[in-house]
Image (cartoon, rainbow, N blue to C red; front, side, top):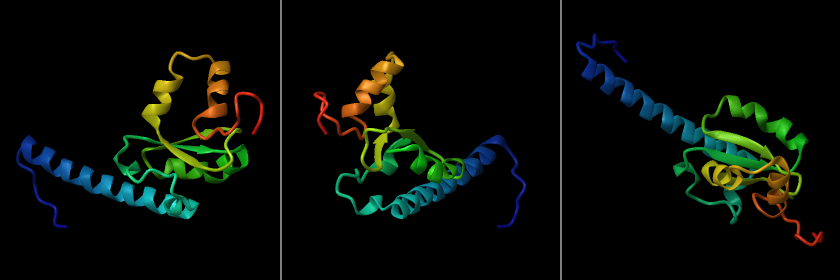
Amino acid sequence: MKMTTLKDQKDLLSELGAIDRRIHLLNDRKIAAFFEFLGLHQRDDVPKDYLKWEEILIVVPDRHVSNAIKKYRYSIERISFLTNPNAEKIHIFDAKEYRAASQNKTQFQIRQMLRNSFGGARSPFGEN
């Protein structure tokens, strides 16, 4: 790409907007490749519109899985991780959904919530 002199702020903002759009598309490709690596693209329970979400919450079942994949958080924008020991496998959610559900809750209330939602599979009666 040939560098040109931008003569005014409007041209500069237009050029920066085009660059931002290209970066966003590349990040979407990173997310799709990462989900393919995790095997999420083949699962029926994974929403197909996840690239439309502002931020994607990846719920993992234990710290070992979290530690193995958390390095990707730094190279892929728009993803975050949550460890839910009640989950049996990796799940994804819209991070806005989680923030809304956990807002104004204590740690104890959040732990209780994670038993049955955001990947949790335990029955409220202690059965699994």
